[in-house]
Image: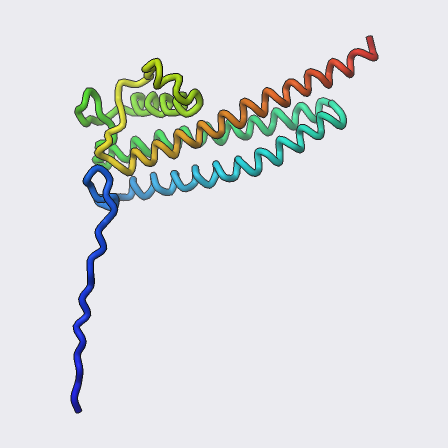
Length: 199
């Protein structure tokens, strides 16, 4: 019996790189946690787009149909829920950034030098991202910063992670502020029209 052997050669697929460094290098537990939180924020953003619009339409129709204290409590309860979810992600992102540093990841830099930030400095950096997400280019244009530490671009995962967080807050704040202004204006008009016959 003649046996034939075939040699199979495997070609290595080059790993994606950012700034000359492999994206999947040094993937630790803290990085995996950050990836999970980033995916959760992205999913929540998609949920906000659809659920927020549907809930906004329901409250809008309730105000058109009849203004009452129940409608006002429903609107305030909805916006309270949105505020709590945003606070939840603020705490998650801050704790995740502290965890990344605890595992030795230099995700921050100051004056061009990589460094570790304290929990307070990390929370200020997170708040800075929140404001930059909410006010878009205003803080960039006037070079306003709440924290002296900056993102270390040598940590590509954290750069992407912070971008997702910033976009989540930008989308959430803009949707909530515009919706609240619209609903509040309709409630004011409904209350005025309700008070006018009594007067």
